[in-house]
Image 1: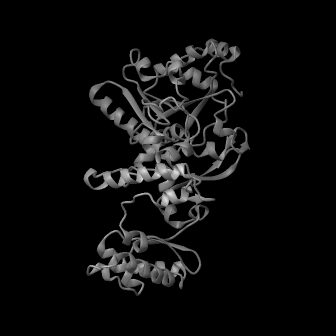
Image 2: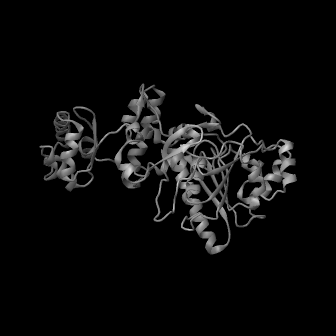
Image 3: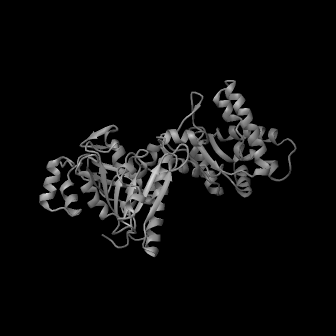
Length: 422
């Protein structure tokens, strides 16, 4: 293993299911960490979402490469003995269990620190470790709704906000967790002590809305208060949710919404344009053959001005194909792109040129393409690992690595706390 990998020599014990902790664990494994994934005897739940056979699914493949899986009944009488051996070798413990379970199993940082002062415990909760909602269960869709992210995402179905197909709060929480663990490991190099790393789906959802998470009290508080008062009356009166969203105070200026930061229908598809600065706005409006007087002088009826300009620009953009506009706007230095469908990006030459995807031969599924490491460090800093070996195939090897003699390995296997497949 290359010493250039940032987490070389770091041992991670992962008690993760679904997305946030498993993907964070995978990022650490890509960076060289040894990750032992503790799973129920029947396997982690994501193995069983649209299974492909052999204990694999697409959901499991994309979040668990480079790990070593140990099927373990955490309620079994022998589980504590196995956990103690694993935790004694751990640098990092990752959890995203239901509220209260980590404490029941003795996996909270405060429970472990006395015996293992160098251990780092990273945890993802739904709503945060404290407060009135701390003990509530929650997953990505629920927390996107609770946080406002579902509304700001802008996707509407049947008049109601909904999420996209990607659980973005989960993935943001995973990135925050991996960053927090890296920071805690760096601090441990200086201080010698471990620590507790906490993040949540709620915090991740708020971070994704950072542009909106600001209130200048003198300017914003009165209109926010007025809107909250109206909102209470609207909900009591049965005003449709779409209208409630439409009335929400926003910080984005009219020109951005109307013309310069948005998507357009083209002759054959859609085009995304983002012109945040005045210079980019001038380049864009000139390139498409229009003029925006508000970029030069004050305009008395700004709403009317941008309503008319919007209609004109939309008609112009609809007259040519996406590729024709992209060629023209690229030449003008304007940030613009066709709106791709996710399946298209898998074969796009740009991510391929930057090693953003990993293509490998799976022992039972054949050729597979997945996302590579989400960050690159020069040399061999982050390298995508192989698929996690077949479920249960490494039980004896993991127990031996944890320090158990062969007779104890066989005793634990016979007792049923772990279930090898060979």
